[in-house]
Image (cartoon, rainbow, N blue to C red):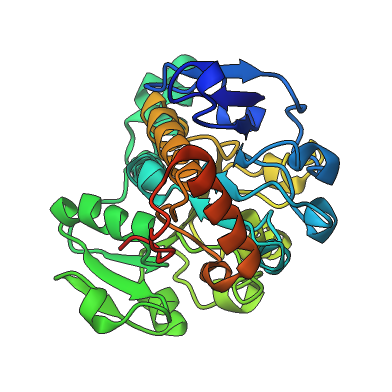
Length: 358
């Protein structure tokens, strides 16, 4: 979809055009001046340059933005990404083109942390298995000792990633009385909250009873978890991934689950997506699968929509939005010229700083 967002009457020309990808949702809650127009399919397709440069801002849910996408563009100034991930976007190319890339970490933080918690509880209580048994008339079997759940108190939780979502999941899990281990080379000891210990990855994998992947997908983290790493885990451990499928070697995980190397897994992220109907992972009983959508709630859509629109409107005012990913773009002469143009066009403060908000 696309949207023309107006701060006043259309003739006043307060704001120019803002494109909204259909993956981002059908409407913008709390922004009554947004007029929605269809401009792209729901597929996670490549965003084309001739489409992108019709707009000043793109509110994107999923389309790929590559060097070809931004080649020769002059108008587009900001891409506000629904979610915390940005692996579909060529950051270097956008920086070179003077395009701000920002995400909505606060919009997805609690919904995605809740999604991870849901997977943990469903796996450890054997909720799905017990429900399935009850539906098939196996009352006695569902409550037998063979289907006893796995208590969390006194166990160890391992968080791979301690950003916005990881830290919020940590907070949600505190009441369960678990020991918390964190692997995140980009988080210093000072940022860890009370009750979370920073360790290396092998230590986390060997000691954790529940391992949760909540880090970003980068070239550094692609296949961070493979056969070697899975082999370090306890045979009684649970593995949860709500981040990106490519962080995990899915073939190795499938084999580990099939051979009983770990007890079970909960995956809200797969590689590839959508999963092939013939994928052997679908035949396993000890894996809980959700279609990278468990965290998509009305709360998440509202928060992300408002965050993205505010980011776009901030740029239209000649200012830098929150949560800029490619911070090097703030030194770009191309971006400076675009922001100055917005300030002149819409009466913003010409002395407004291009420094990203804290």
